[in-house]
Length: 509
Image 1 (cartoon, rainbow, N blue to C red):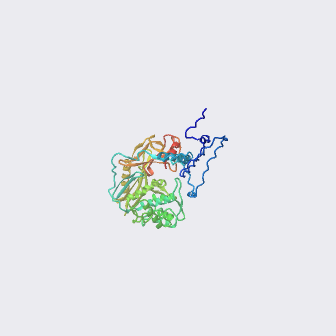
Image 2: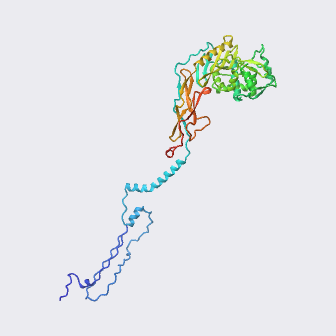
Image 3: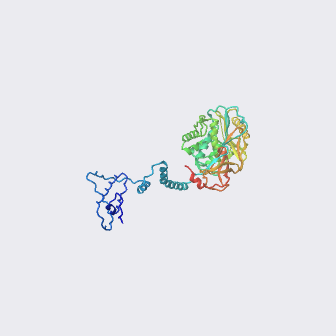
């Protein structure tokens, strides 16, 4: 048999050579130079076939050392850590995805979302524990009311000057030129005001005790034909006169010696007291008034009807004074009875105040009166000055009476709010509103064409609670101003509840 013929192009040595071992080529790192390829071994020369030992595992090809001409490697500084996705790409030998708006947005959401959630939780806790705002009372009813008709035409005196007003309502009108004129003993109204303002006398009490000095006793004897002064001639040095009786002596028999005694007792001297009188006049807006003595005996003490009404509106707020001036007579501590020169009392609901008559000043009167309108006791104040028609006291009383009674007739009542009407609400400061209602009918008092103010306010010295039951009185509805204002409590129409969690979380400010 012929021996097998070797395939063309292959020698025996080729056929007998063991298979080549694979060479490991490490992956090239990014940016590093590619390693030189290992040289392929040349084939051995052909030789006669011979028995071959079991081939051994081929050793891996040795990596040749870098040649002398190789460039020197430099030491690199450590780079900052790469983002997680880039590191993962390096480990998997996959390049990182290129930057894109979506990838940037996703990365930011992953980073900031937990911070936003934490911040929201902190803000929510802060909102919940913050103190609640103070509830406020807000009015929804009209802030004023105007009476129908034309303004009343009052019977003004034909001479001198006059002025008429109602406490808390305003002025009804005036007559004559409002220029300063002597006012005689009407001056004592300011003396009484300062004494009772600085030394209040409680209802039913007599006030402080005043020592009667020698001057008061001596001046008390001037009610003779020579001096012709109005005095209290029953006082003696060493007596004690109560403040109440001193004011009565001042306002009813118009005692000049007691006016001067009160000035010395209050301010130390008449001059110091006169300064207080003028300072008080400025405080009350009495721009055309000048006081030179506490009794009015001096003709240099001058004022106007308008200025005296400003003072009178303050006097009617002093209950002790009106209790005295509305008396037709007064008995002094000695038992002597003195007639009130104001002949208007006790008729037509007159409250008196003070007369003043001298030859130079004529007849003068500052007067007050009242009228019951519904449940309101309305007070009015007027002044008539410079009545010279004899007898001057009768002339001024007649002119004042006409003016007083005409004003009383012009006063009327008109319903403004009915019981149960919603007049406002309690605002809890976080959007909650609880209606409040009037607890009684509200009637405005005034005259035709008059506009009166209507106000809703908290009760004096009280705070609106955060929670309260329906029917709780929460404030006051007031019509008018001053001593004759009408006041009606307002109450919650429904329960006042504390703001809810949602309101607390969403509040601003």
